[in-house]
Image 1 (cartoon, one colour):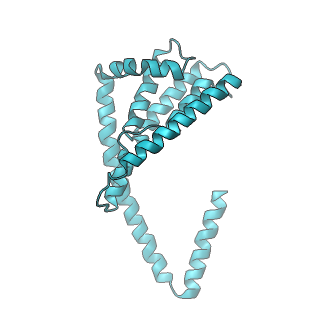
Image 2: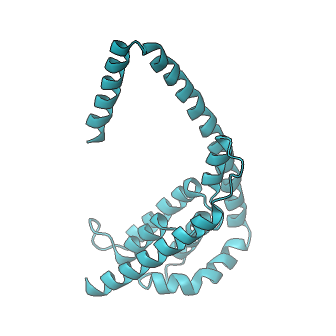
Length: 191
């Protein structure tokens, strides 16, 4: 659907700009947008590299096993199907830590690994397990201690206080995660 809507918007904008004599503003806007997109990508690239490096160091040390143990009661409650799957629990823990630090982009590869590991134990390959559904929910409504990506975007756009929205992020992510987990647990019992 979006592949139909966006071209319509773009073509109608160009036609309107042509007839209203603003075609020069369109071409300037295209180049300014491209420049800001590249600057934003560079900002994200640095942030992602930093935190991916930290996560890789954590994997090689005893930190990951300590984090997995710390999250054990939480993971046991949320993922009762993963009784002895240590690898899945560790990958889920790493993903939760990355999301907790506000690193959605760095958490994505970890999340894909965890889903792949859980899929190995799935008897119905075309249907999500309860653990997979809960994991998707946790990724969608993850609690963020440090919203790194949002701070990086606000900083790159010249915000005077790029971290001024941290309290609002805490409140909204805690509420979203609590409501999502509660609803998912209720629905898991019914279905």
